[in-house]
Amino acid sequence: DNATNRQILMDFVICWGMKGEDAADGHSALSALRRAAERGEPFDLAVLDMMMPGMDGHQLARAIRSDASVSRTRLVLLTSAGLHGTEGGEFNAWLHKPVRQSELYNCLASVLSGERFEPVSADHPVSAGKGSYDRLRILLAEDNPVNRDVALSMLENLGCRADVAADGHEVLAAIKREAYDLVLMDCQMPRMDGFTATEEIRSREREGGRRIPIVALTASAMEEDRDRCLAAGMDDFLPKPLRVEALRDALDRWFAPAAGIRQGGGSGHAPKEEGDASIDRKAIAAIRALEKGGAPGSEGLLGRLVELYARSAPELLDRFRDAVRRGDEAEARTAVHTLKSSSANMGAMRLSALCGELEARVSSGLRGDEAERLAEIEAEYGRVEKALKALSRETG
Image (cartoon, rainbow, N blue to C red; front, top):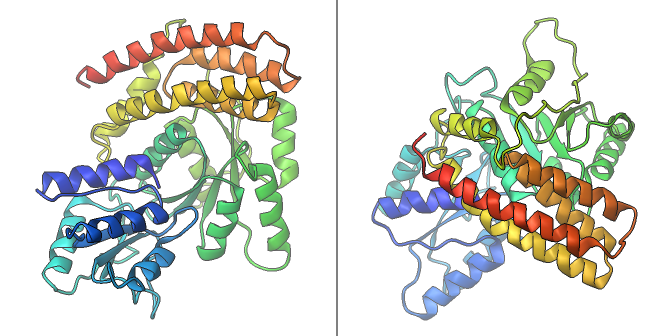
């Protein structure tokens, strides 16, 4: 379900001369398999992610195996935890995430030739030499696709193994299945927000089990927001847009070996941004640094993020406009908040500030002047889009 990961995997198989198709969830994948079989061109192999909303990798595999028209498709699972016992009976092979290009190639070649494939041990460093976090398993709870892909790239560049959840319900399901070392929890998510999810996690922990460190991801540095994070049971918090230095500092606070570093106590203040141009080039430089860091799939990251942002931003503007027309304050606030956060991650600080001002106004009710303010945001987005596309074409 992760758009960036899908694009990376598709780039791999296409460059190997294979024909491929991608799907964002299990139901879409099952439909694609059946359509191909009906055309008389069944898929030889399917690569399935373990953690997906609606239908996870195991459920999808069972559905494929129970359908005679597609049951002979070879299946490879991508997972952060590995398989044990009879857990993986539906699969021909499995790989640890993040998957490396060479290992995926060897896996697919083995599966297609009928040979047995053994993945690298789960204890093998995912990103040797990237830092001291190569054994950490992180759950990233973030519904914004741009923010999610930026944070995942940071985590992978630091050597962490990371899974994602798009809302609180997915967080609760994930930690029930997996034993994570830390949760990065976005505070504002649909269906169930980060505060509610954290309170539920802490309630479950009181019934028995270890305490998972939870670090809030928040776009606000106001003292009352920090207090609310702590009251919900969060241990620390990081300002958005997330910066790799701040993320590394947070991991140090919680996992640095015997360095006398006190756990918790993040500063909670976003770095001051300079300049009034449409794009802060420091943010672009940070993304380019990730590209050069050697993390799996990091090559071309800026171009993919610009493309993803250019698709999602107009959709969010339409969502806001439609919500105002229907008088839905909550939906309008969510749409403009999401655009504010994505824009900050892409270095569009003026656009992010305009969205923040509109979000604050909508929080106290719709006033009838939203169209005028939206026009200003759309004009600034036009400048941002042009600047980002120009920057993405530059050589790093």
